[in-house]
Structures are given as structure tokens and as C-alpha cells.
Image (tube, rainbow, N blue to C red; front, side):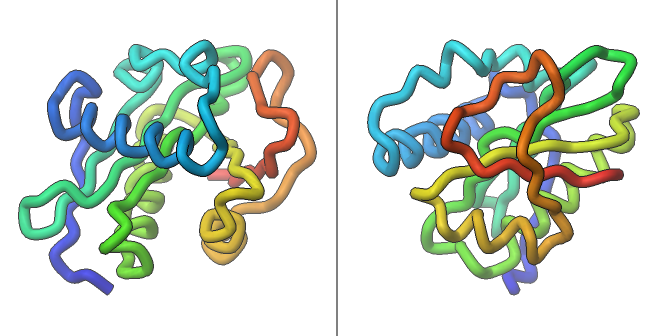
Length: 158
């Protein structure tokens, strides 16, 4: 485990957060091909009061990030984890775990009761990681929440 991981909330408009988000999108496009995901995720959803973006740094250098956005009806208090990404040279060192633990804490602070996320066949690391960290596979997302047809979906009660 990387001992120097720090995770902090950053505005999605900062260079660090934007860099991590773009790196995540770049990797998804390389794995799946060009996608229309921008139509389903707007960066303002990753901003307070209903969203957030967390950036991990190791020894002060960008290491990864993850976002949270509200989904479903506001009174349900459900959120979705978006764009978990860790620099390739730091994978399997604890950065993803630190990011997800911080995301769960922050989601609780924002008043969310349950989190959802999705991943796909071209992300075998994620398909193995989420069940190991307490996420349960589900077939569907809440009504009104966009999901990719071929995605593998997970949820976690906070």
C-alpha cells in the first residue's frame, strides 16, 4: 500500500481534478472506443451541493480521482460514483481503496443513503475490485438514472 496517499475534495474546475477526469475519459475511450458519455455526465453534477470530486495525490503528485453525483429523485438520497481512476503506475497500491473510502464518507456527509456505480467487460480490474470492497451486484439502477445497456452494476448501502 502506498503510505503517502492524501485524498481531498477539489472543484471539478481545478487543473488537478480536470486532469484526472480527462485521464479517466481517455482510458475509457481507449478501452471501449469513442463514447457519447458526455451526454449523460455533466461536470456540474460533480460539484456541491449534490456532488463532489475527490482527488488523490501521492507525495503531492496526482494519483487518481473519483466523482459523486445525485441520481433518482432527490428525496431518495441516492448517488452514483463516477470516473474512479488511478494512474496506471499506482494501481494495486491502495489508491483506489483510499479514494472509494473517502467517496463513501463524503457521500454520507452529503446525506446520501445508498451509492450505485457501473463498470464493464473491458475493465476486469474494476469487476474484481468492487465486490472485494463490499459492493453488491444489482441488475438495475433506480428509475430515471442513465445506465449503459451492457454495464455491470453495483450498489452499496451507506
